[in-house]
Length: 282
Image 1 (tube, rainbow, N blue to C red):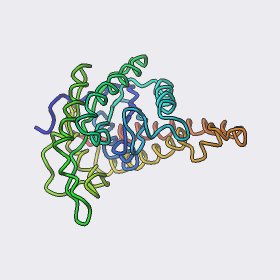
Image 2 (cartoon, rainbow, N blue to C red):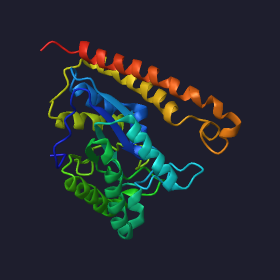
Image 3 (tube, rainbow, N blue to C red):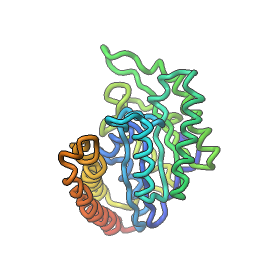
């Protein structure tokens, strides 16, 4: 089987936070996996917040902006608490694997710390293992040679999940695809995410979705729109002026950030209504 553990079941009113690096951020732009998860339970009202940040690690090294990484990490933890998630899905390990054997213990310890730091939310946890590196077309270097090391990091993720009694979506153990799923050995494009979404959907306890394909496509479009609005909510383009070290110049405009919230919520209601009305007759 493609996965080594049960996938998380999403319950009515679940608030899902997706937290991780490039894999998570790009999924927010394409929406295939979120569509698979939300349409698996058409009658359940579910909300998703994508907090992916490209190039990130469990230390939040991408999130410091002009501050040191620990400050970005703290901001991330505060934001997660504000979002009041009932389930957090983590996607880490690929970037960290470049530190080799020496980085394994620090990675595991920091991942444990991250799990502890989000405990106050009371959220259930679920884990994605990193996906395998693929061999891209020349002249790009063959990054697939790093999979032996990446396997150790995938195993570390499984270990953290086991310690927390949490489900693992084991993308590393997935049967290799006949064609390349990534654009460069590393980053997934829309077709790669669509492939993964199909595999994840097959493994969900809910079984295959009852939402008609054309409505699934519409749900995915709304998800992409919603994710873009939420992105501007939590990562506004001029963040340095709004909340950063130059806020003395334009900080008064920061009040407008929260105006994205009702727009995000409205789209979320649309998504939940669409999937509910779009079920095929059994």
